[in-house]
Length: 305
Ligand code: GLU
Image (cartoon, rainbow, N blue to C red):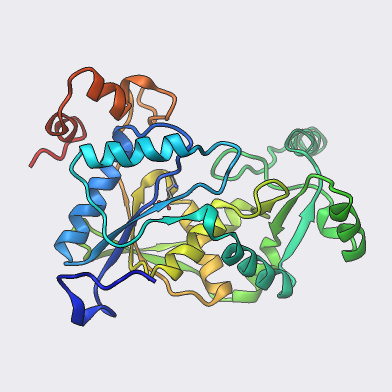
């Protein structure tokens, strides 16, 4: 549990808590800078704390040198964080416990098809029906495999035999369990409620919550951490707004508190697309190497005030 903010020792239960949560699977770019500055600005406005969380559950892609580079780049920008840093790879037990709870509620099933098999299955359904098979907001076909029909014994046997698999949320069962429609409050840059958003978790189908090689997913670990860290305001890019629907569903199923959300504008490249970690030109390190200052970065992302 993080220590109370030194400036605000008496009002801890009501003080705002925000987090910036990069994944160290590449170098930070201008989009990360915007997100970090947006978080810092709102935390300061609300007199709250800003935590740094390292989202490194995918050990096949995350690297300690990327984490070190991220922390150095953030310090170069003049961004500071409050309280201890939480590194997700240190907390797999917490995510496992949440997964076990959902499993005990009968909401988890295992699937053993590979991504390419699932794509072929969706293509076949499209050919059979003449209609496009639905895709999730990331563009992947909704799950059309037979995992849900496997018995518990068959599932345990395959897992024990070391078969690659994904553990999925049974979306229909999860929605039936919560009953009421889901939504969240979107706040403006000052943290004031601006609009109510209806959540559509069904758009994700039977979303993956863990895999054999990565024992949790972004969706599961982020809701567990936001709750454990007492996060009151989640500030992140618009590219994650559809994911928030899954987060709202998981919060309701697990009985977790619901933060306020702000999904901010994205920085796009010259081609109009969202920046990626592999594009050198917009990387903070490359810009710094080319002589840019933190003030230049602020101007480039449009927060020169
Ligand atoms: N780790 C995510 C990313 O780097 C951010 C997650 C979040 O803010 O919820 O895109």
